[in-house]
Structures are given as structure tokens and as C-alpha cells.
Length: 150
Image (cartoon, rainbow, N blue to C red):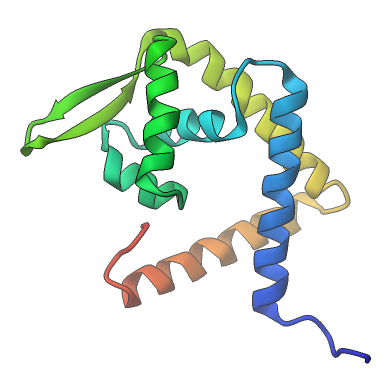
């Protein structure tokens, strides 16, 4: 059976899946002593800290219990710390420790290489156009869904 051209949604989600798989492989090959999930958690914390664990799980699209495992292991290595949330003492926020900063920089290098591999035959203009369009799409979706993941 012959299928028609791939839909926009399929291409977008499949490209995201393949990019994440490429990042996961690159992280395993980098030998940083982190699982891909732990590396993703560190990068997300570096961008959004201090952030509540529940919000971090949402942003990463992982189950809260999965995130707890990542954070437990990162905390045991002295890379993140949990602090009481000043707005809700029942909640905890997560932030990087100074020891994590060099590792986050190494992870970003791995991410950059994976992204460069994915866009190797794109011009800078095409990359910037795609980034702007995806950012606009995300804004549209966030404004219609009450800001989820903004």
C-alpha cells in the first residue's frame, strides 16, 4: 500500500524522536557517567532553576517518579540540590550546585554536536527560520492551552 506525503505532525514528532535518540547515543558515547535522562535533567535545571520537581517533570515530559530517580542520583553525586519552595513548604525546588556547571557545559557540547549532525546540510538562514517558526508554533500552542510548558 502506497502512502501519501508525510503529514506535518508526523514529520515534526518523528524528527524530535530521532534527534532525541541521536542525543541519547551521543551522551552514552561521551562517557560522562550520566544516563541520557540525567543529562537532560541537568540541562533543564540549568535553564529553569530553581524549579519545582513537578514542573521539571512536566517540562521534560517524564513521569514524576522517573524524575525523582534522576534527581536522587544527581543529588548523590553533588550535582543538584533540593531546597524547600518558599511559596509552598510541601514542595521542593531543584537547582544546580557549582560542581555541576562544568558537566553542564560538556553536555551542551554533546547537544550542539548532535544538533549540528541533524542540520548538517542546512544553511544558517534555514536553521534560524526553522527556530523562529517552531518558537512561534510553541507560543501559539501555549497561549491556547493555558501556558503549559511555556
